[in-house]
Image (cartoon, rainbow, N blue to C red; front, side, top):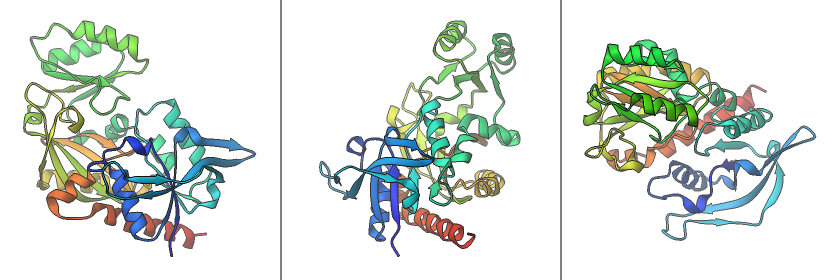
Length: 319
C-alpha cells in the first residue's frame, strides 16, 4: 500500500537532477506508488500542539528543465502523513536544530527519516569524536595556545569550522604557512563555536572516500579526488568522482559504527574516510547515491526505500 510522504527539503527548482540524492529518492518513492508532497523548513509551524506545514503535491520526472510539478499549496497537519523525509541541506545552525525540535513532536507516529532527535544529537564533526580510535589526531577547541601546540606536534594541519559543510572554511596549513594567526582571528570573527583542528592526511591527494551506510550497513562508495592545487575533495568545488570499492579497513570502520547508527534510527548516513581514518559522519542530508549507482549499476535509492518502509512498518507493529 502506498504511503503519504512529505519531503522537507530546499527549493526543488534549484537541484541538479543528475546528482541530487533527494530527487532520486523521490523518483523511487513515486515508482513504488507513494504519494509525495514538498515543503520548505520555513513552511512548518507549531500551533496548538500540532506541527503544521504548508505543502504542495509533488510529481517528479528525469527531464532536464522540466523535472517537477508542484500543485496548489495546502496547510496540512504532519501527523496526517505516514512519513517525513528530512532532507534540507546544512548548515547545521539554529534553524536546522529548530526543525529537529518541531519534527520531534510527530516522530515516530509520523515516521521521520532520519530520526530528528538523533540528527540533532549527531553533528558530523562532533558525533565522529565518539569513535576516537577511528579518527586522525583531532583537536576541538577555542584555545589558541592549544591549537599552536597541536601544530607544533603535527606540523601539517587542517583547520575547519565545527558546523561548516560542503568544504566551506577548510584550510590546509603546512609547516611553512604564516597564516595561522590571521585565520584564527578570522574564525573568531565569523564563528562563536570551537574550531576543528586535525593532522593533515596526505592520502587526501588520492581521494576522500564517501561511503553510504543504509540502516548501519555499508551499501556503496565513491572516491572524490581533489582538483590540482585544492585541499578539498568536495564535488561542488571541483573534486572528481571515481569508482571505489571498500578496503578491509573501511569495512572495519563501517562495522564498528554501524550498530550505533542503526540503534539511533540513522538510516541514511554518509561517512567520509581519508586513508585509514574516519573524518566525518553525515546524517543531515547525505548525498552520493546517484554517482554510486552509475558506477556500480545499483539502485541505492531502492535499497534505502526498502529500509525506510521496513522501519515504518516495524514502528506500526510496535504501537
